[in-house]
Image 1 (tube, rainbow, N blue to C red):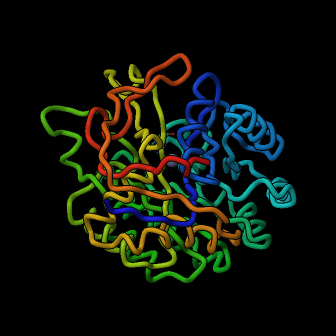
Image 2 (image 1 turned 90 degrees about the vertical axis):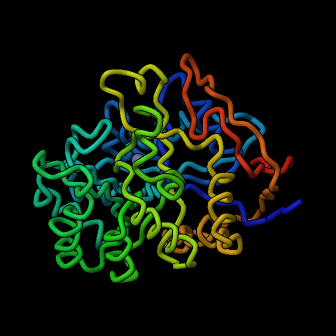
Image 3 (image 1 turned 90 degrees about the horizontal axis):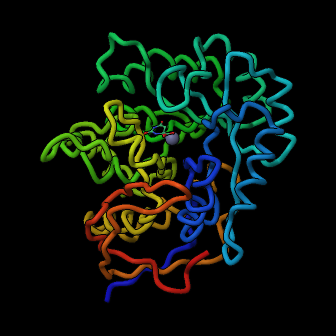
Length: 348
Ligand code: DOR
Ligand code: ZN
């Protein structure tokens, strides 16, 4: 049977939410990942270090006793975020990045940035202190076609930002287009990108196959096949500035299967297994460890993990739904076969 042992991976983009589902979401991630960059789009958002500290404690309290996991916290950038707040975040040691949501771009982004100019003082403090900016790269202008929002954000906002703040470390999160891949490749070594497993596996047809499928709706939205190909190519190329970030984002089933279904895909129940499937299909299993376990820590200036996981090419069936607190959530690959398994004993 085909097996693969790699340094334990980390997830550089994750939504854990808060409240009754938290314990299930943390466990789903901690069974495979040692650490995760935890997104701050709670209600209310995590806009200050003290909130990040309290959220971190809730996450650790929800972690099952037999699991190890380190949440890497983020702050939610607003028009009001002060340079002093940034300095406090940096000094805390627990905050590893600051998340830029354009206001209205996605789930719980209403408190996000209305005009990039309003964040210049905060960005200058981040540039000075070395705290990375984690970017949801989509414009929100209603006149812009939803499939073009990432490309236009890069042209209008991100590229000028890198000129104004050349030493600022930036992660362009969940890249979805060949344009984003090209931009990050051409940028300096202060610019990196995360790639989700769903954007590697699926193109936009998946949202409409056999009827409308809200469980494949996420933001940035799935794109054309040529874009998926570009993501796959760079992910398996071994490029050190592209790394794993699931953007696993659980929503209760009723909130997805609704007249106004929300964006987000719950991939944590099979994340590393599905990345293994993608890399295996591309004949590039030897590149999985770099992408999942080495490139992220190198960019964030953290050590790689000191233990390993073993993946086995042994199929199993993903349940149709997963109970999470008081809700049920439909995971990625629901009811379908996942070709790779995490070997027993490699749980965190
Ligand atoms: O699909 C998404 N879901 N994209 C995001 O940017 C946010 C996330 C969420 O919080 O559910
Ligand atoms: Zn996200």
